Image 1 (cartoon, rainbow, N blue to C red):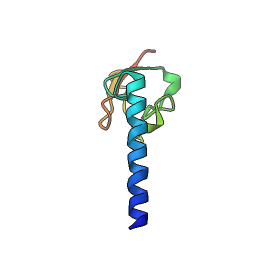
Image 2: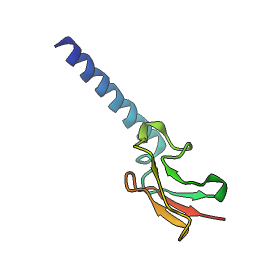
Image 3: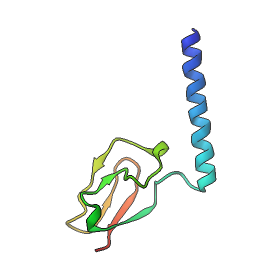
Image 4: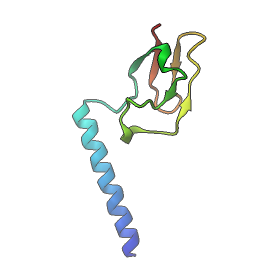
Length: 83
């Protein structure tokens, strides 16, 4: 019982931190943003090192080389190849 209560408290604390970060950033993490990517940043994967850790999901590599655009299936972040 005590361990379950401790786990619930930790989950509530994580949720409060995430809500505060979202409120402070004025958005909902990385979703809906268009990230400009250069060829030096390839191969492209999401999340990138520039993204907030609290909004992380499993790393997925995105094929952007063919048409210059890609969208993450997890978070919806859009990427555009600029060079």
